[in-house]
Image (cartoon, rainbow, N blue to C red):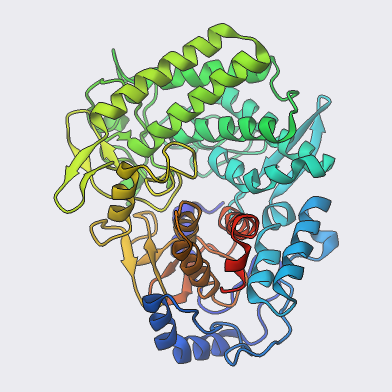
Length: 512
């Protein structure tokens, strides 16, 4: 089973490579090369001026004339799950934008991609159960699976089957947390993983055991959002309560007030960011109340182990646990414990998670160690500094966030790249000069004004390389050089952006 790292090396796909099982675009590489060669200057000009770029990258649309759009979804009989609410939403967007709209075509491919290709829904012990793979890696990440189904939460009340599917994800995540709260990715039951020889406490149910704070935050976010959207409290059973107590216990262990805790990780690898310094415990930290995250949401090792966006996320998740414990499960002990830890981490963030940047003033750094050492950067993966308002961890109009946002979207951020095809944040995970569509989407979803939304949508429309899908990353000067042809999180998140824009600023969609 290939890893994310191996996919970076093996999936530098040129031309119209498509989701597994979907026929390749008929025009192939020649059409793409022609489109990008002829449209290169225009695209660059468009992103500089903010004007719409020509429809480049799909044969037959260089002239702007309507042409048949090839259906990129699996055949109906091959789709993993059907939601009436999702299908109705696709038709609504198509009707609004018009049959010849490239944006509508992209939305119809991307928005249902998680349901079409990645979910395995069943009932186990009389309760919904849903295993969700990431796409081209057959494993379930707690983060990715939460993010993949999140855009459907707002539709769940219109579709009982969709509601059951999301409840099934929550139930499965609770089981995963009980198996190992330190693991980030799981097999569908006991099985084999190429990482069984990692120097950590591996189990047959685990695909990978990288400790990432956000792995425990995302299931809380999903459960809380599902409850708010549907009113359904059936997911908050004794097993869920037990999992929440385990989350708090794990967070406290990783505050490392008395000792490093039970978790350590090393891997025999040539990739420095795939293993961990300090004999598997990471670089030293000052126990100031923040929580250690040995890995980032990119699955890359942290440099300074207090990963700041993830600590903000932990505060938000702990307060959501407290709300559910008080309002639903009537567990005041759990509510009090979650609130106390949230208050402690929040207080530590106020003291240790701000730093003076020479060009941008006081901003939020990406990492720290509690000794006032800081890593000034941002990564494309979520949680990131850019994505904080999206996760509800800071107000988008907060001056501190606005200064931080200006920093991460500038050349002061070593992982901000700008080229002919676009500009945006990348990641050490994919190397230099590769921009992540997830980060472009996040820029739009956290925007205060129209420009960032419109320019982001145009950039995403012009960089799918004729595939009709989003990817993990693409080269800043050539979108046909991309990683991961089947990455459901990026696809569904793009759908969320289009739907959110339709609900809040519909006029912008017709300008894309």
